Image 1 (tube, rainbow, N blue to C red):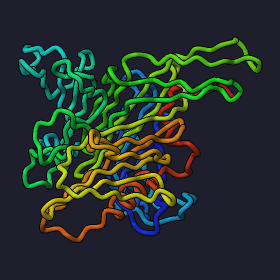
Image 2: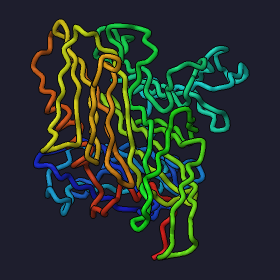
Image 3: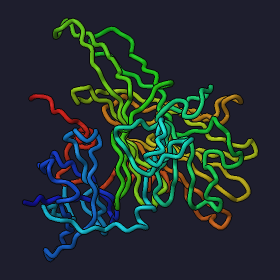
Amino acid sequence: MSWTICVTNPSPYERNDYVEVNLQKLGVSSELNESNLRLFRVNFDRSRYEIPFQIDSVLGHNSPVRILTFLSTQTPASAEDYSQFTAEFELEQGTPTDFSTERSKEYLRIDYYYEQPDANKGDAPFDGYNKDWDPNRSVYGVKIHNGQLRFYVSLVSHPRVYSAIDYTGSVTSIEFQGDPDPDNDLLSPFEKNRPEKRWGQLYQLIFFPVPWALDWFTIISLKGKKYDLIWSHYGNIGSTITMRSSEPILLEYKCLPYCKPATLTLECYLYRVIHVYPDKPFYLEDIFVLTKEGLSISFRPYFESEVIFSKKVHKNIVRFEEDIPDYFYLWNSFAGVARGYGFAADSHIRRLEIGKNDSEQNMIRWRLQDTHHNRCINFFMYHGVDCQDYNPYHEIGHYAWYEQIYKPLEVFPLEIFSTAKRYISLQPSE
């Protein structure tokens, strides 16, 4: 049995990029996986060759939602509106070729830090470090490597001791491999060991009432909360983790006079799926809220970061507020060295605030609009003294926002809300 996957490239130039396929939508049995499937690129003369891929059960082992990811190279240009396809692939049953090597397994990997270290499982006595993931054990943090970045994600508020700083769901260190000092933290390059540094912390969600209810919106604070690691996987294509809020989010909606019962209480969970690809200076993140039954709920997310800047460092904001309010880039430069911190999303970025007063000079805050799903890219760059010819507008606007968010390679035919729908495990009845 085989399945045809057609890929469309909406750009006016040839592309090499990653493609995600919803296997549930494609009709692939859950019994078929990385051990008994093969993927082939089909040439124009109908000859073909095998390529690597990986499959992620992003909502956990027991979920029917599975995402196939592969690299489509030399993808010819096609229509901007995704109405044509220019690359074809075939997925079939069979024993796949092993494209991995011992070097690649170290190059692209995930490290885990367990709350209760266990010497019998090889954990270090103090931090619970282990290279292997055990879904039955509680993880307080992970470090993700992709050859270009090494970054640590905290799943808890206080990974070591209780303090005034809340790290829930934030990246607390970023090491950029282009830096001459690879152990230099991009979040505090001039002052080491500053505990308040963090990036991309999702600190608040807002849920709006039903249209006919004269109610204020519901604010859900994420500070002091915890995430569970429900999926983790890395291979030849990239690394993927999924964090889910440990505590349920309870939302109450007023149904009368249009439907019954009078009030409806929904039990929901926040999901954050992080993807990295080899040698890329960014990580992608999908953020969504599902009910316990698996249906999507719209919400508005709020973010904050704290990057340690010296007052002597020049800061520059890259942003088009009126034309394309979907991304921003913050640059700092000193002595010919420039570091960039970027964010882009498939929703407009609003209320961007950077160092609004002296006490918060290192703080960055922003929010996105109300939507069911947010695909975000967190993009980092380093340019040394020998690299003066760079364009920050092009880096964040083209490489990040345009290619990864606005016009990614997609499966043909394109389905409306395809990215959001691929994470819904239960389809509502017609």
